[in-house]
Length: 126
Image (spheres, rainbow, N blue to C red):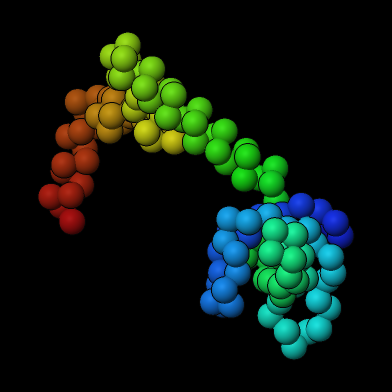
């Protein structure tokens, strides 16, 4: 739950109520009515109006800044990987920093010849 007086940005207009998407505002009240879909009352000083908004329609300034920083960092790493022709770094960035998986052949254990013959005979007998 956001605090009163906290600066938020309107990011969507879920209920199509002509919210000024992209503008900032301040939380001035909570809407505690259980029958209402709106969570907050936000005052937008640019147009001097109050709006009832749901929690999905607003986002904190800090969160938006962090998302933009993450996006720019990722794009910069991709540019660096392409410029230096670093295929491993490029694949790691594009796959979401997952560890590279080993091929299926390398992951299997090597069987001895006797075990292999026993398996074949078992399958043939069944």
